Image 1 (cartoon, rainbow, N blue to C red):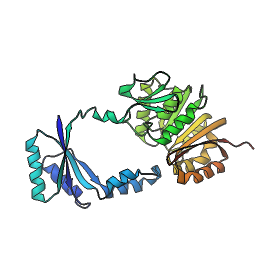
Image 2: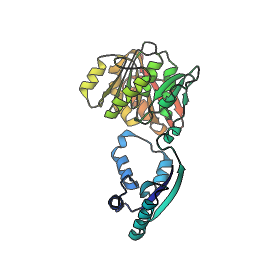
Image 3: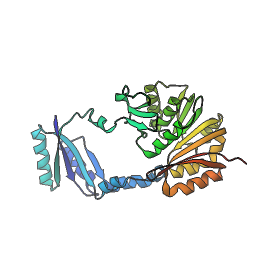
Length: 313
């Protein structure tokens, strides 16, 4: 089935009005794109990330429009939209998308991803495609953050496969899709527990865990903020962890640093990633202040990953 993508131009102070006009005309499935609104969202949630892909920022420059999709064969809807744009003086552009399988075409964006020397991340529809010699980590990449494609996640996975996790208890702070918790179990850990502030992460982690054959009590997920929730922190500290994974952003790692020693078993390590090179010194200083010494550093592109353990006195 062939489709057309229409973009109706607007101004920041009129984009909602344009969307309302289109809805009143019978066009209900709309995508509103507004650079100012997105920038406001990013600013309000600055603590969640340090970095925005410059390619995305470039694409957003001056962007203010409403997009919608119509079947090429639906001439009546196309004519109605074009008349509306013409009478209202709205700029309208159209792009032919051709034939596409709209239900499964997006899956092409998630090919198998080899990580390190032994791991391979597979979307669930390719779960049977793991090559010999690779340990599969099977995910639904559409559920939440953590597909394995980001350098910060890959570095943690590589650091994990380089160590012996047989029988280990692993704590995953900022668990997202559950990819790191699942990886720990796939590498031989006996128990993994993930924590994330996003309630969606708990269900996503459980669902992805089931795809890999891991369920409660071996794999658990909780929702909460470890920095702010003393009860959650006390519960986690009730079990000393052999490995703690913190793949978030620099500001959150810095806030967590003073709390990490109470979570670590005597010979345990913490792997911290999601750190931009420009923030590395600050994170290392926070870990040192908490009594943790750096034992390994990894780098990919502008991202850094640190492994740290208790400093010997």
